[in-house]
Amino acid sequence: MPFNLQETMDPTPVGELAASTPLARRIRTAVRHSDVWLNPATILMIAFLLAIPLQRAGGDLWIADRIFDWEGGRWSLRDEWWLSGILHDAGRRFSIACWLAVVSAWALSGRCKVPRDWRGPLGYLAVAVLAATLLVTIIKRGSGVDCPWDLLRYGGTRPYLAPFSFETLAAPGACFPGGHASAGYAWLAAGFALSGNPRLARSAFALAITAGLAFGIAQQFRGAHFLSHDLWTLALCWATACALYRQWENRGHPRHPGTMRGTAA
Image (cartoon, rainbow, N blue to C red):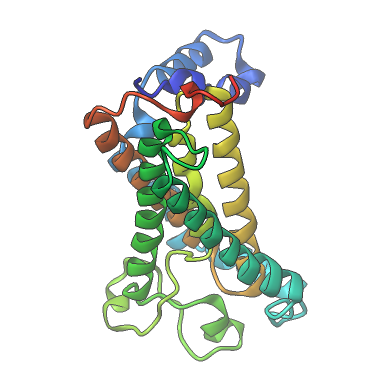
C-alpha cells in the first residue's frame, strides 16, 4: 500500500485563518498532493533555509541570551533533576528500551502473539530509528561546534562558531546537531511504519514530535544546545525515515500494521 500523504498529513487545520482565499486553497492543495514532505533533499533544504536566521543572523544567540539571563546569568538548570535526570537520562533510557522492544517483537514475529504481518514494519522501524540516531551521533562528533555552556559568551572558554563554518573544521566541539532530541525525533519513523492506518500514523508523528521537542527544549534550558541544533536533528531524522521508507516500499512490502489483524481500525 503506498503512503497516503493526503490522509496522514492533511495540513488543512493549519490554514484555517485564510482558508476562504483562492490562493490559500491552491497552496493547500499543492502541499496535500505533493511528495515534498517525503523528499529527503527537500527536507534538508528547508532546514537549511530555516536555520539561516538562527545560525547566521544571531537568532540562536538571541534565544540563548534570553534563557541565560532568565536563569540568572548562569546555566542554573544544567543539573536540575527534572531536566538532567528525567528528561535527559530517563528519556534516553526509555527510547533505548522502546527500540529494544521493537527489535524483540521483530525477532518474535510469527510467534508469541506477534503477527507475522508485523515483521516488515517492525524491521523498517528498528532500522530507521537506529540509522537516524547513528547519523546524528556521527555528524555531532565531527561537527566542531560547541555547546552554549562552553562559550565565552556564557562563562565558558571558547568562541562561538556557527555550524558549517570553515573554522569548525579544526575545532574540538562536538555539540551539533542535538543528540538527545534524536531520541524523540527518530521515532517519526513509527508514523511511516503505521502508514496503513492514518489515525495511528498521525498519533505516532505527534508523539515523536512532542518527545523531540521536550528533549530538545530541556537541553536548551540546560545550556547544551541552541535551537538550530534541534531543528537540524528533526530534519535529519525526518529525512532518514523518508529515505528508508521509500526503500522499504520499493522492495514490495505490501502490508502495514494498520491493516493487520488484531489492530484497531
